[in-house]
Length: 303
Image (tube, rainbow, N blue to C red; front, side, top):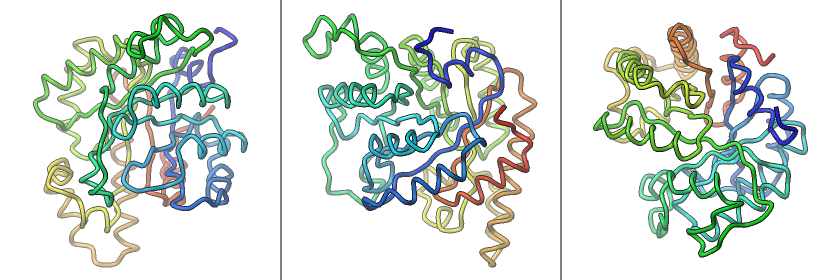
């Protein structure tokens, strides 16, 4: 591999299983929660995604990623087009590069009306595919910025999001194709709950050869009782009725948590048997103990 390759790039090229975790920056400016998270995940995962104001106003993802890197973890900086125009998006990538962060996950971001900041105005100057194209070719083609290129920019290890539950499916496969052609080297799916639907989606992914163009990782997110209770109609549609009933029958928070972890482990076990799946991204909304339990009991190794 090139000496410029990130650890994640090397793992992708190796063909081995990839294990990621996801960390949400704290709501305040105290770095202590990030340092604690770094201590917990050290040696457990290959890299850690750092969300970008996904459903809350929090410390900047770039600052959080830099703090995690200083603690020895390899960060994946999430960059959303919801909050920045193309100038700020490129500036963010250049700042990340200066700090030694070159894994970037490009996403549109959740619409602000789905979070607590409903009065905020969105930007969406460019979409995730255009952002991937911009970052992939930044050194030689800065056309979106009115530039010929920015010498010394990149290279970056680029990722994006896949949505197995979104409709219509044909549009989602088209977007995946566009994302891989635009430069995505890894793709992380939205959390998987409906296994039958995911497997149907996966068969089409494999038939189109998309799994050979980028490392595709399944998102694993144990449902907390509060998340389930406040999930909107779109999120609830992704949760099969038997699974919803299995959780809704539990009134004790501890029993709910145990069941959610068990379901996550069952999901990993079943999806691990799919040909071409490259790994998993574990996220538990700040419940790091739950995420670590899933990592440990799943048998997934960070070797």
